[in-house]
Amino acid sequence: MTQKSRPVLLRRRLLAVPAVLALALTAACSNSSSKDGGGASSAAALTGDCAKYQPYAGHAGTKVTMYASILSPESDSLEKSWAEFSSCTGIKISYEGSNDFESQLQVRVTGGNAPDFAIIPQPGLLAQMVKTGKVVKPPAGTVANEDKWSPVWKTYGSVNGTFYAAPMSANMKSLVWYSPKYFKQAGYEVPKTWADLMALSDKIAKAGGGKPWCGGIGSGTATGWPATDWLEEVVLGSYGGEVYDQWVGHQVKFSDPKITTAMQTVAGWMQNPAWVNGGIGDVKSIATTTFQDAGAPILTNKCWLLQQASFYRAQWAKGTKIAADGDIFAFHLPAVNPSVPNPVEGGGEFLAAFSDRPEVQAVQNYLSSSEWAGSRVKVSGGWVSANQGVDKSLYTDPIDKLSAEALTDPAATFRFDGSDLMPAAVGSGQEWKSLTAWFAEGQAIPKVAADIDAAWPQ
Image (cartoon, rainbow, N blue to C red; front, side, top):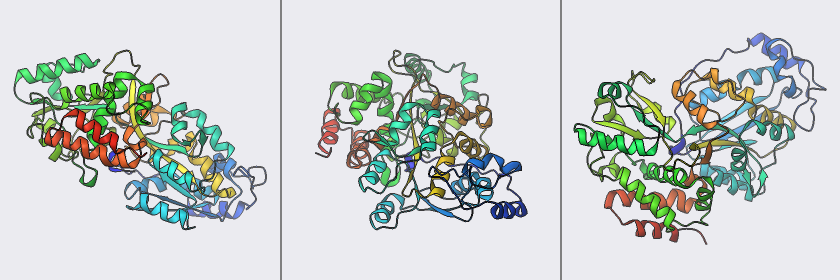
């Protein structure tokens, strides 16, 4: 996962199956299997707490490999989420995380050393892997599990209309962070519409003291990505999913009046010198402030609002109470155009397979299920699934719960992070560069748009 979609997860221990039971189960399970990765009809019966894994039994003593960009401590929680499954079925899942995942996955796959699974954070990278001819279509059990996701999620795990990779994690981008404590003291209410949000911003600015908005787009070699989120939020919230899709596919160009109008909306919001950058500096300081540091002034009442994703919860100082009545909380960013129903921008990860061995299919079926997603939620806070079959009561963190409700809302206009869908030369290249120049140097909107359009692959 890139920096713009990496949530930092807390760890909670999952009760493990006792070692004696695990050994007994491994011995009891046979290696027989079915084509769809089940094996239930020919495997020894699993009992007790392991009975629920019967559909995946029949492959004891096998091993599958998994490769991703997820590192410790998040990878520790990931491995705990399938620990009981592995003990009960006897399928060992050998996990490897790497900082060089995106580049090394291509090397491994084309070099004949592909892992059994890869957890892919960008639909664009999935499409690149499918072009190698090495990605295997998922078994019927995995396909059936996709009924628990809204249809648009399945499209992001598909390439040219063919489904390849089941969604795993999800994160909510359309949030605004604020301080309930300071809002209460000032008599402010959480705005329900874009017009109310802009009116509140103006009211805060005129009241003096802290400015209404703070922000930062610094992120090392990925500097600029938060600005792409601001533009994506405004495009989606102004015109809805159809125009958003056309824009991401470049049927609607950056220079199109719809997109330049959206950029003007962003400028009136996040480049308004009376509104930003509270507790940090002027508009240009947004380009030199890291996204991690951007929200800190909210805790000292020098800034009131920050637009950032659900994973930003990990950036608040230790001891900060994150709750509806706490030091920090968040609300859903309203639609610019009230006729757009509940716009939600998000990101996520997808599980792609490079093998169709029966044990690989069994793991693939399990990791696409509501049961695994529920197990992953229970292991640690800070992880959210858009799987509609997950029991919402399992979410103990209020931000996770807020995000899950939005991400699984069947009436929401959900769209994946636009720059992650665009070709890399644009989404993680020229767009980052040009939007950074827009904030740092005040480049004119027509030039910013033209430069990004010119970078689009022919």
